[in-house]
Image 1 (spheres, one colour):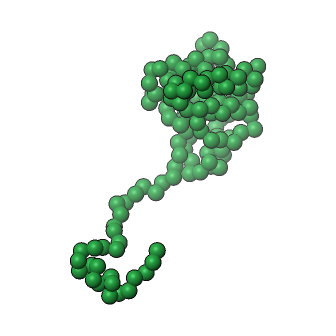
Image 2 (image 1 turned 60 degrees about the vertical axis):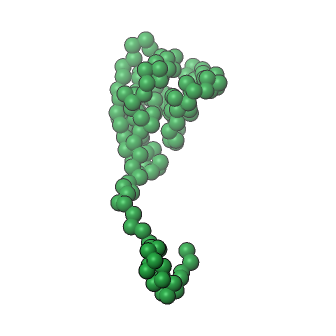
Image 3 (image 1 turned 180 degrees about the vertical axis):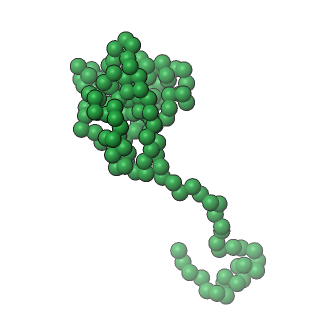
Amino acid sequence: MANISIKSHSILSKIGISLYKTRKSLDQSLTAEIFLQKRDDILAVLPDTLENHSNEEIALFIGIMNTMTSEEPLINETKIAANSNRDLDIELLNFDEYKSVKNIISFGVTINSKINLIKAPLINEILRKPDLKKPLWEKIKNRAH
């Protein structure tokens, strides 16, 4: 940013041109929330709760999960929050249900995991671009069995 002289600043302010604007108070919180849904020994990581998805997206999610779980899986859903991806990974490790997980499928959420991780696109992207389904099914088939 260039500095201008006091004289220039004075002239500009007299004609109504302000060099500085006050900004609205912005929420500087970088807290990220992710939603975890554990079905049997599979953990799904979502950027948003399923309640905020359309019926079509929920049906797709359930269809994907049913390929890896039993017919009537035991479902546990929770939310975790953190200030960074590193904190998110730590929170995930501290999640009680994490210890019994065999596979993780992450829908558009970046996480690091030593457990078998299947990186999937966002659910709405899969619906918009059907060509994303085949690579996802291949990943699931290779990891889940």
